[in-house]
Structures are given as structure tokens and as C-alpha cells.
Amino acid sequence: MREYTKISVYAIQALLLLFGFPPGVLQCAVGDEGYCSVPNQKADSNSQPLYWKVTNPTLSPEHLQDLPGFTRSVIKRDHAVITPESHVFSPLPDWTNTLGAYLITPAMGSHFVMYLANMQDNSKSALPPRDVERFLFVVMGTVVLSNASGISHRLLVDSFAYLPANFEHSLKCDTSATLVIFERRYSVLEKHISELIVGSTDKQPLLETPGEVFELRKLLPVSAPYDFNIHIMDFQPGEYLNVKEVHYNQHGLLLLEGQGIYRLGDSWYPVQAGDVIWMAPFVPQWYAALGKTRSRYLLYKDVNRNPLNS
Ligand code: UGY
Ligand code: MN
Image (cartoon, rainbow, N blue to C red; front, side):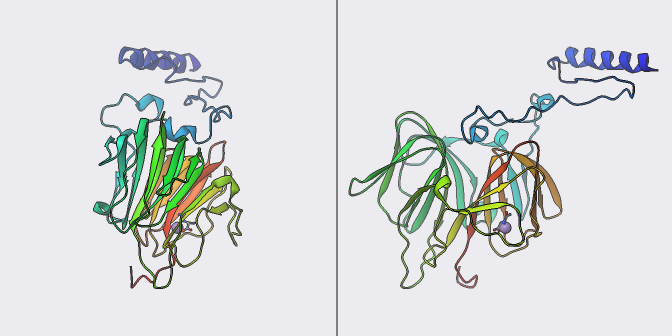
């Protein structure tokens, strides 16, 4: 009986080779039980730079990489999962030497845009449209942020900046850098103004999360001038959201590290570093971290405004 199992494993391997799949795709362990397993997943190596997986994602399971037309991306009325194999880059309007991929835009129903900007040699940003505020987070490389009075900040991986609407600034890069950027039309509140903010995630304090186990940092002040915040949420493998959230706020999410399962509405998605998620208001949402390493995601959330006014 065991011999038959071995023979059929060899036959499948021969067929896979014949169809051009690399050896090792079907790594079979034929023991007393005669089981057949997928290749062992290696834990993420600690030797890679921070957020390395975002710019070097696993495009699809090894055995599906060459399958024409395969993508994990899904676009639905109230949510979307946009995975790296379907990112499409083109020159960002008015930027120099920069390719951008708009991943979430109002065409989907959001009130914000979320995009990746790949800055190349001697690249320079353009300003957002009038009355539009900007938040950027460095995923790879280094950029220099300068304002109109010539004051500049070097932003390394894990650094971020918030630029109020109509704030003159430029971003420059002499080698290469990847940024994730959020922009939205500022929702003005009388007697409140938002200000330039520059920081880095590791300098932000851990916040209380009553009833939850994940670790939370907020990158922007929680005060009234700010009409959105950016959360950095960390889950150890096996940890999950306790609240099965349904709320009026919108989200744009970039999984910076790790892997897990995201529930969106009635669908359950395996997700990994590099994946982007759009969550419309009121879409049921829940996450569980799996695998061997921490999950960390960056999350846009609109806050501090009466839903009747925005
Ligand atoms: O704050 C939030 O709404 C956050 N916990 N949502 C999420 O992680 N999907
Ligand atoms: Mn939420």
C-alpha cells in the first residue's frame, strides 16, 4: 500500500516537472501514515531590514507563481484586498522620477486616497491638491522633507510626517525610497488648526487597549484639529481582535509585517505583509495573527468629526 503511495507521489512529481514546475513544489513526506505536505514555511528571517516584506513580498504561493491570471486581490462594494501582484505603478502626476500606485481612491467609495510612491534617483514630490492634507510613512529608504523656510528632516524607515492642508513642502530622495501616503480633503473645524508633525513609530508611546490584547500606537495627536489618525497595531501569533468591529469610520490598512486572517463582511482572507485593505464604513472586520512572527499593521481611521458634517 505504502509502495503505491510512493509511486503516485513520483508520478505527480514527474508530471509537475513536465509542466515546468520547479522541483520541490510538491515536497512529500511519505511516512507510515502516507501523508503529503506542502513545503515547510521558514520563519521570517530576522536579518532582513524593518518592513522588508512590504517591498519584497511573496507574490503568491510558490506553486501558483506562474499560474496565469492568479491574484488574491478582491474588490467588493464595502471592502477590498489589494495584493502586491496586482499593484500597477505609473508616474505620479507632477512628481519627478517617482512611480506611484493608487490603491484606494474615491472611485471605490472612500473619502481618502492611499498610494505607494516609489521614489528613485534624484526624485522630488509635488504638492497635494488645494485644501488636501497629507500623511506619509517611510517603508524603505530615506527621504528629506523640507518646508518653505528651508527647515528639513531626514525621514528613515519607520518615520512619518503629517502635512496640514496647503502646507508648502517637498520630499526629496537621491537613491530610492518607498512611501505609503494618505491624502484627504481637510474637514475644517472652527477655531482649530492642525500642525506639521514629524516622528517615528518607535518613539510613540504604547496606549491602553481595554479589552484587547494587541499593542497600539497612534502616530497623530488625538485632539480635535486632526480629522484622522494612523494606528500602528501589533499582534503576536495567535492573538486576535476581541471586538468583531462594525463602525462608521473608514480604514485603509497596510500589513507591514506578518500574516494572518482578515474577516471582512462575510469573507475571510489569508493576508500577509505587503497586502493593502480598504474597509468601508460599517463593514464587519476582524483579524487573527498566524504564522511564526509578529503581525504589524498601519491603519488610517477618520476620527473627531460628526458624521453629519463630513
Ligand atoms: O480602531 C480600529 O477601528 C481598529 N481596531 N480596527 C481594525 O483593526 N480593523
Ligand atoms: Mn476598525
